[in-house]
Length: 467
Image (cartoon, rainbow, N blue to C red; front, side):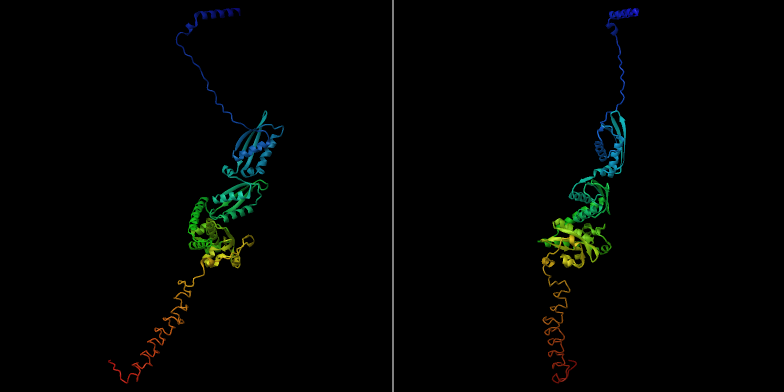
């Protein structure tokens, strides 16, 4: 060992005496090798919860965001059976919570112990799309409910999804949709078929999935709606009159002139709100053909455009399904049935009272305003003119043989041209007619002495035939 130390010291001494300069003289290369570090995935922010309430809230958030697979860390379990509690929360969401019952088919969650926490892997299988989840509207009042339904129906959507604590049956929702339709004939082209499914079936907090069935595609109905709006504006603009009554009469007259009553279809419709364009405002104002309900919806749309209080009445006429309107005019309500005005004339169904309609019409009188106004059609247009020369039955028509002033009436003795006037020289029975054989001044009369054919009455001179 002693010899080794001596050799090392000798070697160091020699190296020092030679100088570093001799070793560093000349060219040299220095090579450094770098190793490529392996890729390390950047740390992901870990989602963690500290109790089962937080776990439940996180799970609902994942459902609303439509996240299918997630891993979370669960701390502070305090000796509880984590596996059992996780399964309990998953079952509660799937079978009792409205979001879970509506949107989730299945939730699986497996927990693995990692020293001081559990690593929970979650997988969610959905039965609704992300868009359907995003379309859920939270509603707390009846008014807001109606507003949301109107918005969906006005856009002719195929469904509306509403979450509310209001306790409603599917029949009540169907009635609300019907009410909205008849109040908004311009915005909703046709009353849709309605199906309602409620999630969960029981409970205070529930989701109502309302599906609308249409006879046409939503896009086509949207186009029809735009055409209807244009027609409503156009028809409202041409209504004229100095009073509200005259404007209403003008609206009725224009509708009568542009739309025919479809008697054939009327006989086939057995329920109100039928998916038939003849029963819509679109059918009446755009296609020009409608049944009673179509006329009623069109007239309400026009009245709404001009600010009149107008309602649609659903009832029966002579035992058949029918609809008409009630309007408020000068503080009183009146019935107006434009369809029957087309069929039977204005006098039959314009500004009528309950008493006027009681014999042939039937409606829910207990839940309908009473119509007891005193205005009549005659109050608006005045009494019927007696000298309508176009009416063959009018006694003022000179071509009416029953008119006592008609010169062709044989009983007219005051008309110099009447055959019944004895002073009418054109009457063959008139003694004043020179051609009347009973006229003594008629030379052809047998009693006229100037009659050359009467013997002994021509001064006894024979008649020369050559003359």
